[in-house]
Image (cartoon, rainbow, N blue to C red):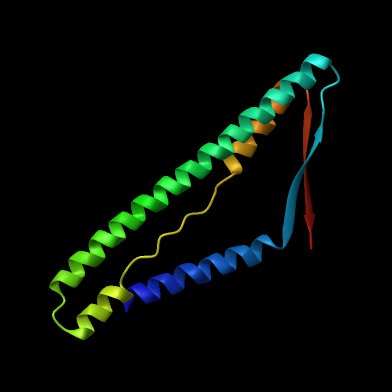
Amino acid sequence: MITRYRLAGRLLTLVALLFAAGCETVHFELTPPKSTAGRACVTQCAAIREACHGNELRRLRISTDACERRADSVFHNCLADADTPEKRKMCEISRPPCWAVEEPGRCENDYRACYVQCGGRVDRAVTGH
């Protein structure tokens, strides 16, 4: 039962964060560099950003796969010791969920820094509701 409460607590926290995030929106306005070399540099920044996103997705998949392997192992060990239907049910209930969320922030922060180094301009704009 503790696992259910912990999961419920995490879900409530996530919902609260999503609700709070809806109160203001941050976006970035990009002004490209004036020079041809600067624009070519920004193109390289974009390629690096795409590679970063690909690496992030691979990291998520590896993390989720590892979590699922651990969860399967714990579950099967629990079942091996479960000698009643109630204990088997507890094994199913206590199985940890495996999910991951992409964190694109690092890739985007690096892209914006690269964009500026290429001679472009990045302006942060916040709009509230």
